[in-house]
Amino acid sequence: MVLLGILWWVVLGSWWTQAQEWIYFSRSDDLVRMGPSGGPVQTLLRDVGINPTLSPDGRYVVVEQIVERNGRGDWDLFLIDLVSRGVVPLVQEAGDDISPSWSPDGSWIVFASNRAGNYDLYRVRRDGGELVRITFEPQHEEDPDWSPTGQGIVFREGGDLAWIREDGTGRRRLTADPFADRQPAWSPDGRRVAFVSVGRQEAGTAGIFVLDFLSGAIRRVTRVALPGSDGHPSWSPDGNWIVFDRLLLDDLFADVEIFRVPANGGPPQNLTESLELEFHPFWFGPRGLRPTIPAGQPTTWGRVKVLP
Image (tube, rainbow, N blue to C red; front, top):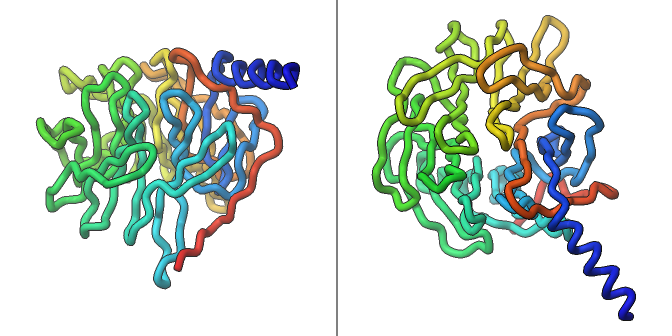
């Protein structure tokens, strides 16, 4: 028994002290990951939902999953413990709850919900409980991203980007132009925001751009040939790279692949090159102690949860 106890603590300790860098993403409804330069893709969880967002310590992930409720499908948020593989509902009410993002200390999750009509921003503690509404504006507010340095939340407000404190104060517009801006993502140092803009480069195209948070200067990072588009940027831990998904289209074929590009611009690199739909990457790396999540045999969850 003593020997088993020692072995258990050795294994448990290795989860929290071996720091590794991974790119997590959705492959259809599966949660998968690969190294920062691509390579073999490991399947962690099957049929678990889409749009994974990892907690700052790397142990938990929030995903979106369709739930059948009262004859319709709603998007709900689920919390997964990547070590135990346990999954629990985080937010379950009528309406769609989407686009989760963690607070820097891992105690809160901000998300967008249309439970009150249009999309507004809410936050909830990691262990659930009462929701705190952040925005009350008549226009849609979506795609929140909580700054890793604790300096507030960037989000999409209509077709522009905006910033707000977690208590709903200090709101200000970051972009105000005829283009459609969305999916903002803070850099690790909190100085820049990567985002997707439609039409800023060429009419009808969606490319990746970077906004300097203090000066407001915007520069292009990717250039997309029609009819393709780029989406869901996420920064490398050192701030030197941006990973994103790219829709590839031609007359006979449609695919979504994971790419990375230097944050200052340059040729993008396809990291997946497969025939599967792979999207919404999240670049996770060491910032202190992190759990090493064993790939093992992927766990399968139901594709659709049915509630009374």
